[in-house]
Amino acid sequence: MSTKPAPGAPIFRAPIGYAKWISDVKRRVRAAQQRASLAVNRELIALYWSIGRDLLERRGKSRWGDGVIDRVSADLRAEFPNMEGFSRSNLKYMRQFAEAWPEFDEIGQQAVGQLPWGTNLVLLTRLKKRAERLAYAAQAVEHGWSRNVLAHHIEQGTVQRTGRAITNFAERLPPALSDLARESLKDPYRFDFLSLGPEARERDLEDALVGHISKFLIELGAGFAYVGRQVPLAIDGRDFFVDLLFYHLRLRCFVVVELKSGEFEPEHAGKLNFYLSAIDSQMRGEHDAPSIGLLLCKSRSRVFAEYALRDTVKPMGIAEYQLVQALPKRLEASLPTIEELEAELGEPRRNAARRKRR
Image (cartoon, rainbow, N blue to C red; front, side, top):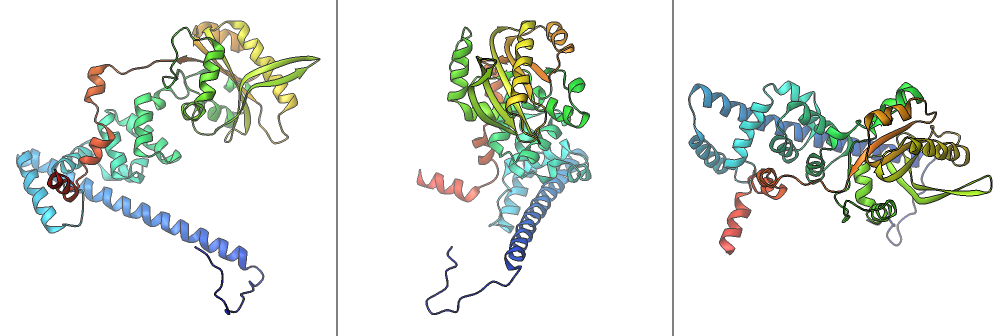
């Protein structure tokens, strides 16, 4: 929206300090809006949990069956015609939500209480273990994942794979940095978004990953910024080329990724160590942390990897990659889609309108 003054209006000359003050006011307004949004969401989550708890308790004590839910849905819709969320399916989700979280205080103290209801339903329906729900909820809040993105990460098992690469970070990085670096790597990495067969060569894999760089960055995780491929390093009159080079915004360091289409061999670590020394010498800035390396192999022996990293000077990790990872058909068919969840959140008027048009 334009703030240009109308013709003939006096020209406003900002006093000294105005620009800084108005910038601070805008920041406070945005912060207040965010707090208000979180407060509204928390109240809605609290309401749904309390309804679910009542339905759960009465099912046990008074033997209220699912037939009562139909009446509850009808009564609440009649009383609050402009409020969505009182469908039969959503009331049953409220009951399931209260069963999953017996104490509301624990919701308020966890990331679960900061997530919208629809996102909580993804956690509720796609994960069975409390610890996994809490872990994915924390990641969703930290990275601002939408329902679709959260569902993608659950399907990919992102949390379960995070921090599982074999590394020497604890011995080669300061304590505050080593934990963050370890949590920035996965094992295995899943590249099932690539149309490659199991016999793909290293250059084919590199070409495909760069061609799908957005999806590759999502799989790498938050913080990775793409720098380039086949990055040249001139060393004593010879040219060497790094497969893929990234910069990690949270670690504040370069990340060298080397691709191996076969099994990990100990000499791979030596070559990556060489590249990291060159990157630190030629590209690392004054305020950058030590560069780290990631060897992505089709397969690796854990013992070989641990021996290779034990006396390696530079910080690096070794992980496998998978080109295809499909869910069993019986399991895939049992998972609700995001569209199905949205349809069950209680939109009676729109659903009725659709039926009428048919």
